[in-house]
Length: 417
View 1 (cartoon, rainbow, N blue to C red):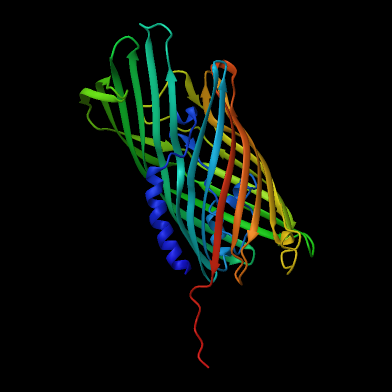
View 2 (view 1 turned 180 degrees about the horizontal axis):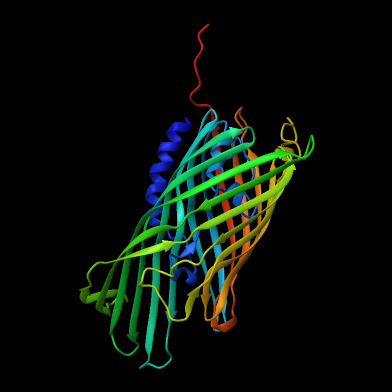
């Protein structure tokens, strides 16, 4: 049954990865768009902390974790986000629904394999600047698309409690940007449309180790390193004269398409380190730090004079608690309760102001019964991005996410008595 579910989910998620708009932020205009969380809901509910070698939950943030998987695991998640944006000039709101990831892990003894598909970044904005002067210029900026990541990873147990791993990532996607400029009293305007097709490969290496402090207490550590990689951006710009029809839709009168321009974008190296303590199948508290060097701002099309870039960094504190995982009654005692706090710099500076982000996360892991500990997960995240200072926009958002993790035994050797 799980095999049929995996095949069906792969098909639909592949289609959705091209169709969905995973962002509603004006800051997604810059660079490659709004960076998406690249882990499962279990880790996101702990503010991104991913340090434990889990035998039944997939950790796609560190490929070394595949060496600790003991069952075939299929996981898939999505969510709904509502954002309230405010500035000195007014307020606005936006909503979006997304499929966030799909992944499979296979246990092969001391070795484990993981593969899947998830968004890397998303572009989605609709900004309108209207002039009160009927002879003044008006602008409408829209953007969509993003970058996706398909990955294949391998983890291996060197000695008990020490696992290493690596994965290769195929990055691909398309970003569309449009700028419509017109004068209120004139029915004809100009439109600039930019299309960027992105593709490239990257690698990620990881190691995880856990040990005993005493009979009940464990310590955990995790390290990943992503070397610098390159994305190729194939850009096409179209300039058109447009006008509105009776339904107020834009109709192209005449268009000039420029030649294809290619640019290589350097994705800088990134390092992640996490550590924590806990009791197996009972509780865990950990912290995680992510650091990435300054990257290139964009693909040569979506650049702005008031924007610069800095190092990306993120700091997280999170964990979980299970009252009693093997109790037969009192279902609430088998629930995994998760929570976390995080703060980070997105790496973008607008109007000389760093765009920071802070959030609180909550989550619940609900056992689905059966002999292989499949489960459903609910996650909540409430955060703030940006500021109203220096003429900028502050985003206050709330996210509700759902995921499921199905577990089974594959590659079992049949015995005949």
